[in-house]
Picture 1 (tube, rainbow, N blue to C red):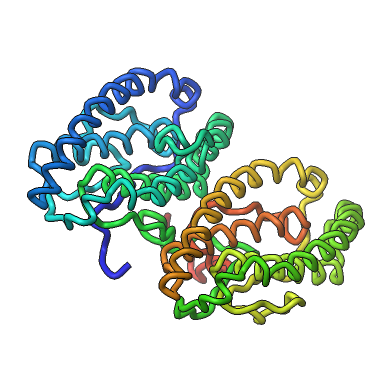
Picture 2 (picture 1 turned 45 degrees about the vertical axis):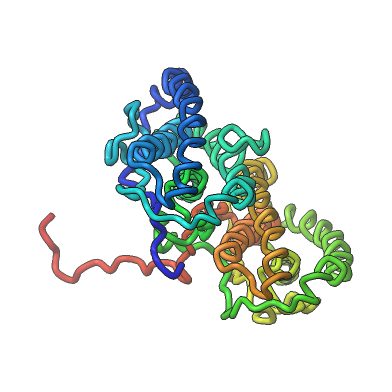
Length: 416
């Protein structure tokens, strides 16, 4: 972004969760859900008045601004609580700073562009659709899908009951979804005329995640796109899709044999590892090109460093036999997350296609969102194909390039 978005999210919540309140979370949230429904009805009337007032004066009335900002903030608090992203019970009025996961909005009404105000409902359509992919149809009205947020909440419910902790990756991914949804609310409710920012690599997501054996380094991209190749992108990618399918058939048999070998030797053979690594890398190259995140036509060999959007896979290592034996079952939750994130990336690609076709440039924030999806998909594919037994990490934060070095014991004992 050129400057900070006027609507942003902060998180002061840890990962510990009360198993008792997690188990009864939906029941505990019922009073909030009822109150939210009544508040939403009132918001519809205030929003209509606010639209006319802003259209003629270029600035929302102060009382409408206060009412709508409280509603947007409360909506975020409630969604954070129900999705297990937050643990404390929120208040009912959406006070600033009253919840550990807070939505920060402009304190005073902002001067807004009248053209953007007049066509706000039309301009907001892409944001609503992407918001539906992030938080599901229950909040946006676009679809009946669970979205990223509620898919994560369903998986986190079991994890929290078992461990008493919210998985860090799912928590970070939920923060991304909540931030985008909060900005969509603010844009729709005329709190700001700044469009929602889909870039996943900004606060409150951490700047860096722990090291992962599968990473997605991206080369420089000036974001320019050839309108001609963008228009014919699906036709141009057909040869790659055919070759990827044939390669996938071969990869299936390699994995089948490799599963038995890894189950008994705790390590995938070197040749198998190299073959499957190229397959994962090539699939990522093709996905990046198809989704307009990459501008160059990729090669057919999946060679390392052959495409600006690449996949780094650590050398083969010993793997846990239990994880190997139940690999497909263990991969199901990650596949659900990947499907939800992939839906958002697909929508981002559709919007990017239109923008690139008109302007000859790829929107940076949408490209970043697609890159995150590609990285998670590469980690999932590598896990399923036995390249690593490290589970995909759902946080949008980019993983460290190398593992932290082990702590060195001091030569002289230090008092504790």
